[in-house]
Image (cartoon, rainbow, N blue to C red; front, side, top):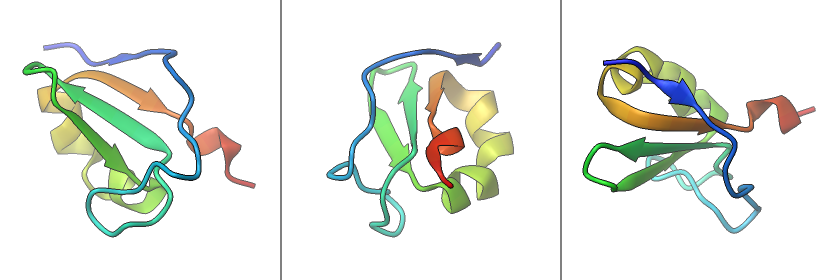
Length: 65
């Protein structure tokens, strides 16, 4: 399976990481249509596995200064 990084609706400050509650900068859409949100730390931690199972990955970590 190929993972695609897409441009979608921008994440905002109310979007929170499903793992720790920090601001989310990554949205992962699964093949089921279910979405997971991750902070930069947790998206990096789980990146290898997410790339294997995700339909789409929307990454806004470049916004972090």
